[in-house]
Image (cartoon, rainbow, N blue to C red; front, side, top):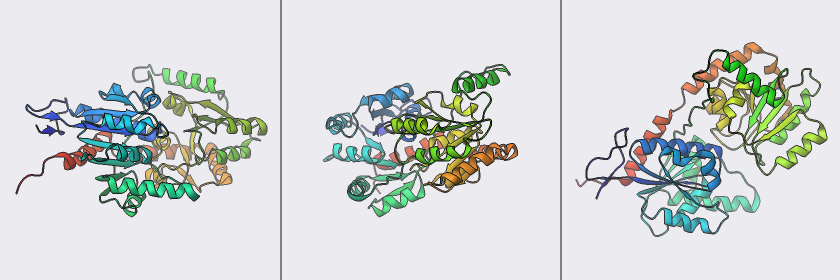
Length: 387
């Protein structure tokens, strides 16, 4: 029996055809890839595609994949030897498997060994390493690139990288994220947003002082050491700007020790599910580094009309254009100067808000992203007509 993937928006499947079954594979709890998979799952399910999301339990809890109409299957992280076996079972009746990120893709390659199931891989991030680890990563990249029917890259340099690693078909991918929505505001009276903003700032300890916000996993390579260095430049100011960092990760303890030892004006508030509210309360957002070509914080800040200072890494420059203050990577003085200059310049902040709105409007929508991905699925799964 044939299947169909292009359905009505109400998810109705034409008589006599079974819905396309896709398995989306997520390696961990990366904000960008998980948010993208949630958006993709919702769009695919709305078009009548049967979607299974294979992801660790903690990612499923954080991103509610089942709330999109998808089925969730717990697959442990890559370090767990049971992960490939669990993935092989989950993919047994899949028409197509779509893996997000290098490690998820490598496990999918292993799970599909000996099966004709097409594999699509999306590379969301740049992977940097040195020495023996770099050699291992190159081997993984080559294995994944050659095994995939199509590699989708979130930026043009990732597409080029996939081609260098042997991909037979590598394309630039639209990777849209849901526009962040602040809780409870659409129907609120006019004064309600101001009251909620004051409440958020009060909770963070920034009622009468500038609030600078950073968001992301507390991991090496994200630039938080550079950001802490930068805060030293404004310790003499009155009022004293407060840097709030929302996120969890293995570097939290080391960052907290630095903050306490150097008396830095920084608060670590852990993982938060109210980032849109924190952004709305902030005077500035700051993105000090990282390997994502389309960082979630950069997208959320521009959507929320919050001025952004960002290190010019990966595809960030292409993403934000002239709608953010870009500074050299790993340059604490430049980062501090940009933050302080923006805090002192309301006109420039207003200009960046307007530019951010225009830039965000140029990005692909969720619907366009789903349409592009679905067209790739159709290419790989529809029968080839006889001439």
